[in-house]
Image (cartoon, rainbow, N blue to C red; front, side, top):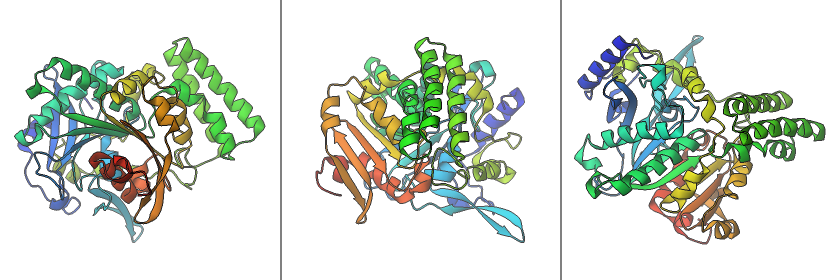
Length: 441
């Protein structure tokens, strides 16, 4: 993915882009407002690929409309999955005619850019359509990830004067439970050293089903599986023995071995249950994210997005995952603690995610060192309704909000598009329960 000729061609394509290219499979109205590459290393041309969609019906002038930034997990999974399968304005759908599969785009009524600008970043470099000139440039830790993201985000903001003072909210799911705190934490530190005109106007971070504190979260799997009725006592003992072996390696800071041990835990759990996916125990088949992979490997689509047609899109990069192998079991809890003391933090989980969902999240949140943690844990868990129907539960104290969303799993915006849209809009705009209302929404 990172060959020199490909790099040059991609950048050539980017500088010619920002024009209207319409094809049958990618209609003009579905094109991003902007897309292209944000250089993170001018010396090597390593760059992060992005797509940006302006707010459809903003409630404030564009210069003041919130800007959401979405980061996918993995590590090494493309934010184009978030774009075209979850929360972007258009979703890839499949239909069959005469036993032939046809892919197309359809409007997403739950898009997160209804009221806000929405920026998708393929992070880290080497992920999706992003470019790593060499594998050695791919980040191996969260500080390196944050440095690249900061360059990309400030580079994007400089593209248009209207972006300069817009409130920024960084969002993401799964392994982005590390990326989001890392870049948020890095922005706080950089802002302290920059003049006001150069600061990023960070207003909050949102993490969905996040993998933020691996040691604490890993310790919950046996309990989660047992009390969900997925395993029996004997299996619980076996699963907990495996997870304690992994935790012991974390405590010894044997990071690579700990990552391998966690993989064994996940494989054991999967084999015990036979579930289609631990990310949603109700599903009969895994999430169909492969539709996005097929779609983005169509040359017409690459051309429409300004990507060199020779690039092969992978939804998740094995190369990036390998480079970040030792990062897997390291915690970013201290970064979340710093953030919640200085800006707003939203944590949300789909109820059906037994892998990195409600129980693992609550376990690590309880261990946070934050002045308001006692009050947060004692705060009422309020029933949250959307259009008169129970959508989930909200618990809030000062800067920290936690939401459990019913009827969905790990990839929540795909499972509950309208309710996840209502959640992010309510939280950003501080409406209803998200603004401190104490009765049912």
